[in-house]
Amino acid sequence: MKTRTTRALQCSAPLVAAGLLLTACGSSGGSGSGEQAGSTSFEGRGPITYVAGKDASGVVQKVIDGWNKLHPTEKVTFVQLPTDADSQRQQMIQNAETKSDAYTVLSLDVVWTSEFAAHQWIERLPEQQFPLRNMLKPVVDTAKYRGGLYAVPASSDGGLLYYRTDLLKKAGITKPPTTWSEMTADCAKVKRLPEAKGMSCYAGQFQKYEGLTVNFAEAVDSAGGVVTDANGKPDVDTPQARQGLEFLAGAVKDGTIPREAVTYQEEDSRQAFQSGKVIFLRNWPYVYALAEKSKMAGKFTVAPLPGLNGPGSSSLGGHNLALSSFAKNRATALDFMRFFSSEDSASTFLKDASLAPPYAKLYDDASLVKQYPYLPDLKQSILHAVPRPRVVQYGDATSAIQQEAYAALTGSKSSTQALKDLQNDLQKYTAQ
Image (cartoon, rainbow, N blue to C red; front, side, top):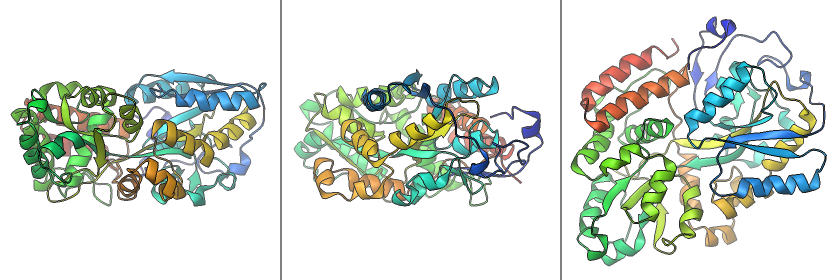
């Protein structure tokens, strides 16, 4: 994003993702990035708000109701923002820039944590008060900035391949595809079935929004490329990146990906899969519980994402809880964050909404694996997930990725030209 304060404009150090370790100017206030959590006051009790994207599962309100029943004088109001991540981020930033206390606890996409910390929009938290040792390390890393804890993992996320087991079995296919070519070959066999008449092969999230950044990055990573290298420098003008983008663009062109999928966000693609429009779907774990409650129950399962020459790579997703720097009733907020991010709450979100838990032991619980057979695949997806672009100004970088990837998918640019242009754009937002 464009820097939004005079102080931020004076900073020029690197932002490195998987929690995007952004080095910024030191703070002049007690809540700044350079201060210890102990210097921040966590006092005041009373009503607070929890701010997150719209909850399709209904489970968030259920968990909040549990808190409210136990804390009648410290009730939490659930403020639901739009479903798309870009709009959520924009509204949270607008609230922070006006220094409003309307938002208390924020549900941040994992790639926003350090950005919000660097701009002093969220507070550093007392690390010892949260059971971080029991969580998956890549998930915890997303909540840290300059060695301090600025958020608490509430859920993680890894991309999964949903597929129609009933149709694959009827077509004589005994295992899910591990490569893109296997997936397209499997599609061709399935589409010969009378039951698959009119179906398309594959869908993801290809509208011009954050989901496209995720799908683009996964395609590049799954072809052996990178969006940014280990030093945070863009490296998309490569043969590997072209193979990744060309897989998506070529699939739209030849109909493997339905043309209407360039309008899909998460919910659109879920509905397409549940209504029988596509055989394979890339989406997050939350889809599992919803699909099991639909007419698709018993007809699907999940597998790791396919790649060019073998299993692909997921982008690391998930949400962290952060405390607004402008919030009141901070003692209540801290208690609520512990409650909402607890192992019990994570178990509820897993069981009722198939959200990926941050706690390692839940993935290895035999009773849970029996009930949710995708857990081993999901754990591996998270442990081997690749952070999104390692750039200083993430908002600008993700907008550039969306612009160029969308141009390639819709045919207004070749993949080669789109990546050349993207390389030039990303260099503007990368630390030197």
